[in-house]
Image 1: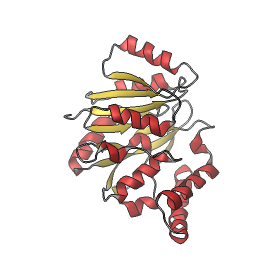
Image 2 (image 1 turned 60 degrees about the horizontal axis):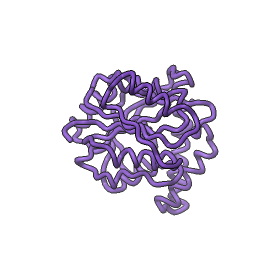
Image 3 (image 1 turned 135 degrees about the horizontal axis):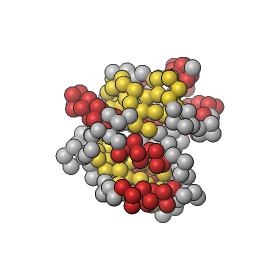
Length: 252
């Protein structure tokens, strides 16, 4: 597997952003990657645009994978993970953007820390992809206990080392906030996540995105504490208060 990075992108009705997202991958200063675009049976022209892009670039590192039916982002990422050939796995959402040095810097950071799991800082962006100036800084290290109250790990920033973690450990559960549920599960196993506190990602937040529904986000996190992590009411409430405070602070 050497140092190949498998980049997994779930694609669902992403025609508005997908070309710009593919551009940011081709612009990476680290070039030893494969791009796995897992199309989840959307109703727009994403597949056409991806095929046109592949024809135009003639880049063999780009692969289009089509789901047999709409199965959601978690299963799309799991499909990409199953087909990944790299030692390292990174997730990139179809509407987010990477700085050109993202892969190079994060890979070097993982090797420096001998990390199985890493994540970076990021900046909120508007619908056009322009940064708002609101940068989320990340801690140097997160354990399971710390992460319960501090979910600063954003999906488009993560990288995993498959020589230290099995693919089975990285399969996302079919629950809401599946990404956070995965972080909790990996960290619960005793693995620590290392944070590279550099702004290497733009997190685009369209007005009607799932993450913009604050009440729903609160419900999803509470569900994870109670149902997935099986925490008691008091312990759940304790972590929930800290999580909510940090989540609000990141957006102010």
